[in-house]
Image 1 (cartoon, rainbow, N blue to C red):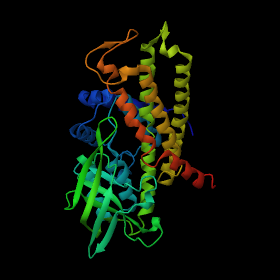
Image 2: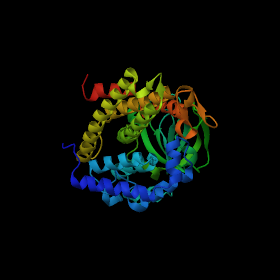
Image 3: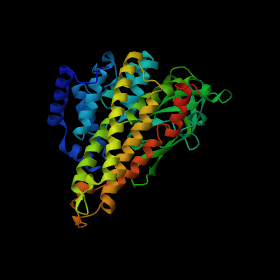
Image 4: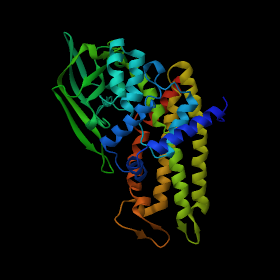
Length: 395
């Protein structure tokens, strides 16, 4: 695999960079840069802009509305979006459910739901984790009992990201409790306006409302909303998680964070010198950069393999592990560089070594605490190591 960009790739890079400069709204990029919480209108505005350019569903085949990009073009697009401080595409409809429907859905489901994902009519959230079934997802207990042409669902989902904005949720439910755990699970689509659904906010450690818990009490869902075969949802779950874990790696976001840490270390003074010249701090930055360069190569290899096979393989667990560890290291380095100034504060403050305004320091501590979650969600990194041990090392 040639890791250098071709003239065509560099032309594409300039095209993306120019389009972002002309079309990314300043109020959105400013919100991303400051680390603040993006509003629903901001995320929807960005979604509409990308869709109007045909750059929203980057992983979809052209016949379903995708741009038909090569793996390198996908990598370049994500890299340039992060460099421009564009928000992450909300993944649940576009990058998770969309590929599932393309592979496992009926023609009727594809024709109905895929255009609604693209035009923003439907905002999807994910109903996987439960209070007793997180990384051990196969132990889920939310029950769906068939009653004629409907399923009756009872149970609870948790850590439902951005569920407060959604009108739809895709869920794993147990349709047969008397077989092996993985064999009794089905994948169903649920309208959140259905009677019997209650959503409650969960406040995270930094104070944000990003996730929720969802309760189902005698919720009736048409059997036509089943994706794939009944009791075969575990296959779909694994397919979807492979796409999720590739996205969690966040190569572009780590590249952006690395440049921010370097810039910060050049400003901060330690004694008579700059923090970036401190041997211990510089060594940590260097190690993180080495790891990131290795992950960029691995990410490209995975993209090429996914294109050849039609789906990412178990190797995505490598990306999930390394990507989250590297990103957490970047946030830790920024927090350590700023010390007590990492927390938000009013006005300008000087500690005698450096003068910062809120635009330089606001929300760094919050970003650090929020990113502690990334090595847990999508299957904890410990579980990912188990997956690699079994599937790749055959131990």
